[in-house]
Amino acid sequence: MSRVLVLHDLVAGEVRADEADVLVQRDVVLAALRELGHEAEALACGLDLASAERELRRRRPELVFNLVESMARTGRLIHFAPCLLDALAIPYVGAPADAIYVTSNKHLAKRLLIAAGLPTPPSWLLPDLERAGASASGRVIVKSLWEHGSVGLDASSVIDVRDAHELAAAMRARLDRLGGEAIAESYVDGREFNLALLGGPNGPTVLPPAEIEFVAWDESAPRIVDWRAKWDESSHEYQDTPRRFDFDAVDAPLVARLVAIARAAWDCFGLRGWARVDFRVDRERGPFVLEVNTNPCLSPDAGFAAALQRAGIPFAQAIARILDDLPPR
Ligand SMILES: Nc1ncnc2c1ncn2[C@@H]1O[C@H](COP(=O)(O)OP(=O)(O)OP(=O)(O)O)[C@@H](O)[C@H]1O
Ligand SMILES: [Mg+2]
Image 1 (cartoon, rainbow, N blue to C red):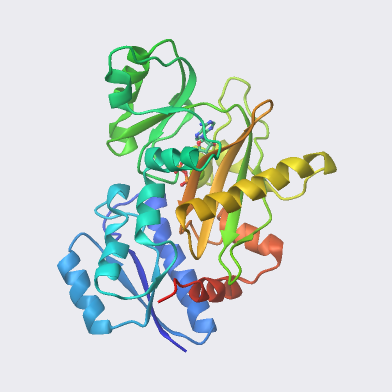
Image 2: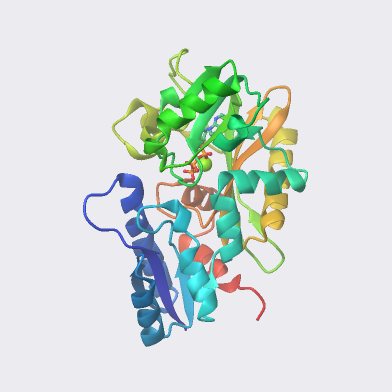
């Protein structure tokens, strides 16, 4: 039995559903830890790092389960919590601080994916577009550079642009709703898959791949899993984006390729614990990695728990595996 501290975002006042979700994760992880016989308690970590440090020194956990997704309501500071744990030499499960940082910045993550030879759609940041001679055209999606959970995404996030100037203007107009920094990515018109991975002694297990289907979708609306599809249960976007795990034999080579890329993405970033890799598949050009999610959502209605259920792995058993997937000391 260990003394495990579940570290999570400080959630205060009026917050969006995506921000409050970490409290659901905290509670299911605490329950699983107790079921496993551990002494478990929780600590909220906000921007007051001095008080977080004091609390951590006072409580002296043997292990921290890191669920921190943002600080002061910004994803840019996501790595502060694991950096503090590193500085205090307190072991923690989930991805290491550096992997959390480079995957949370979608642009940095894509540069590293490209360097590792993994497919990801072309993208632009505002400074790229402001350079003389910059070019950009075609269908793109403008999304947040740092935030997750489809923050700021809706049908109007997918646009057709003729040049760099037009794209830059569209990105600037969306900065506020995207947490201050945007990335534009070439739009991949195709199927969407999520691959969940669970750490283990011989490398990660890739859990059953899930496809997000777009049913009863208006032809004029882009097929994207936007904010409403993730967080507004009453919306058509939420109700008409079911997950499926059963595939026809004809999909076997595609699924095998997704599994191989997901595993390579885990190695590329030196991940630990648990992760989820999001893909879109172009009919001709094949799969593209949209992003790599370190310590992804563990809520019962999210993709990771669904993949565990499909694999027949009880939630508490998955938590036990995450606890064992520690870096060598
Ligand atoms: N290049 C793209 N082409 C097509 N659709 C895209 C593209 N990028 C994002 N999307 C759509 O937007 C959704 C959210 O994008 P993405 O996963 O990059 O952002 P996120 O907010 O970090 O999400 P998460 O909740 O997974 O952390 C995707 O699930 C997909 O439906
Ligand atoms: Mg995603």
